[in-house]
Image 1 (cartoon, one colour):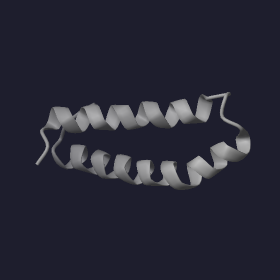
Image 2: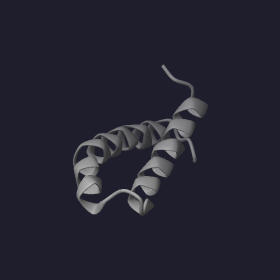
Image 3: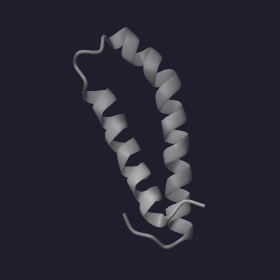
Image 4: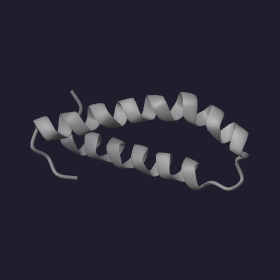
Length: 61
């Protein structure tokens, strides 16, 4: 099982990655949609799992 600190770090990193992809102006819109369809769906799923884990362990970010 990961430590709470590892989970917090992973959660923050995913949040930053999601924000970076959304704000990156160098990625063409059509490519961004393709990325978001695959990558962001998976990252959001992982982020939700990590958030649930943190909630269950009463850990604040």
